[in-house]
Length: 247
Image (tube, rainbow, N blue to C red; front, side):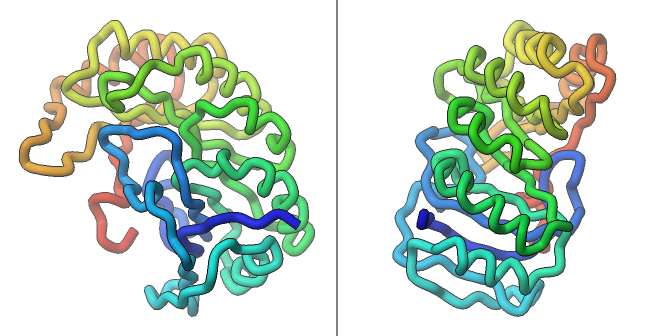
């Protein structure tokens, strides 16, 4: 029986992408092998002896339980929430691909009406392959080197989209002052080549300090225009969960 290192299980509103504002249950995994400059979940890099569970649902009150968590434990808590969509997030949940391959069919059997959303960096396509049939919605990022401070993952993103596009897919990209027209258009072209019908979400960088520069409205409109030139569904949706206390 597989087990997983968790950070928390809780109920809240989705804070990113086209489902923003929709109530969901969240299972947040520990660990991420990537190091994005503007990471919004720094707890991903910590090791937690315990994971916490919000109970009752929506109360903001948490109880601690020892890691690792079993499938039965996770199923027990999720049954106490009444949200249709369950988001598996992190961190990077695909670091726990083997666990998810075993867990998702069992969770679906417990409540066939649940839909599973995978929130991921969109890089680990080999880990996605064995569990894609169990996922209903894929929320993936395109990691722009100018923003993340990491190397480019163009080919990994391409292979990931080829697999993820079998299901409902939307693609997000965080962009900032450092993002060039050439880099942005490469990302847009990638989406056009592999999943032109997938909603493409522009997320302006959320400043972490007063030193961080944000995009002007004029600059944001220009990025939007470059994407909209070839993609049918383009939206600007800021990361609401880092701006609103109630998300």
